[in-house]
Image 1 (spheres, helix red, strand yellow):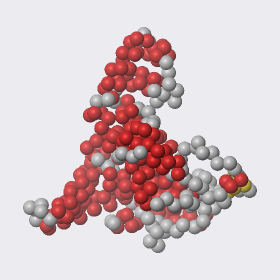
Image 2: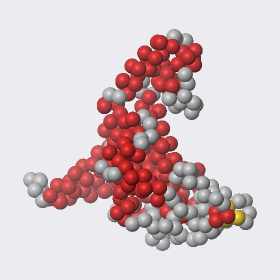
Image 3: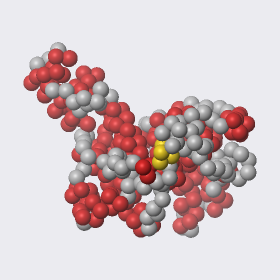
Amino acid sequence: MTMVEEQVRAPDGRGRIGRPSAPAGNDAVREEDYDLVGQYLKQISATPLLSAAEEVELARRIEAGVYAAQLLESGDSGRPREELEALVRDGERAKDHMIRANLRLVVSAARKYYRNSGLPFLDVVQEGNLGLIRAVEKFDYTKGFKFSTYAMWWIRQAIERGKAERARTIRLPVHVLETLSKIGKAERKLAVTLGREPTAEELAAEADLPPARVIELRRISRDTVSLDTPVGDEGSASIGDLIEDTETPQATDVVEFQALGEQVRDLVNTLAPREALIVSMRFGLEDGEQHTLQEVAERVGLTKERVRQLEKLALAELRDPARHQPLLEWAG
C-alpha cells in the first residue's frame, strides 16, 4: 500500500477516519467535523489539477511500474533487477500523484451523496477515496476516456457500496459473494452486447451457472436494512414499521446502470449528429421516452422509411467491435 493510499483513509490524522454512530439527520456537515473537513480540503488542494497530457503520462508510468513488478515476480525477465525496481518505485510515485490530484473529485461526489446517507461526511469521503484508488488502478489511458468521467463511476459505486455495507445485517458467505460478483459482471457485459437487461437464462449461460442458482442468488443478495433504522423527519418510525418493497432495486444496481447509460450516450455521440439524435430518440436516451419512427421523422424532417434506414445503419456502426470494446472493458 502506498503512502497516499494510507493518507486518503485518514483525514483526521489518526490512521483512519473514525466511525461514529450516524446522527439522526445530517443535511449539513456536523459542527464537530468542520475543523477536520477544513484541514482535509486544505491538504488535498496542495496538489494541482492535472491536464489531459499529464494524466496520460502518469498512467503510462503506472502501467510501466505494474509491468516491471510482474517481471520481478516472474524472475526471468532478462533485465537488471535494479532497473525493474526503479520502474516499480516510479510507478508507485505516479500512482500517488494521480490519487492526490483527484481527491477533490471525491469531495465533489461526497457532497452530492452525503444528504440522508446516514453517515458522517468524512466517512462518505473515505468510501469515495477507495473508489478513486480503484479507478487509478483500472484506468486504461489507451481507450481515450477522460479520467474524471471514468473515476466518477468508481467513486459513486464505492460510496453506494459503503452505505449498503453499513446497513447490511445479514452476512453472506465469501463463496456466495464471489458468485454474485461473477453474475454482476456477466449482467453488465450482456447489457452492453444485447442493449437490454439480460434474462436469468442468458445470465446463467454467460456465468456458467444453473438458471435456478442465478435466480436464487439474485433474490438473497438484496440488502437487508436494520429494522431499527429511523425514518421520517422526526425519526419517530422505523423501517420495521413498514412493509418491505421487494421490487425496489438496490442502490448499487441503480448507480451501475446510471453509469452504463452515461457510457452508452457517450458512445452514441460518436455518430454523426443526425444519426445520434435518431438513436437517442428511438431508445429513450434523450428524455427517457422511446419515440416512434413517425415522431423521430417529424423531428428531423425526413420520411419514416429514411429514419428507419438511418437507424439501422447507425446501429450497425455501434455494433462495430472497435466502437463498443471500451464498453465491454468497462463492464468488467
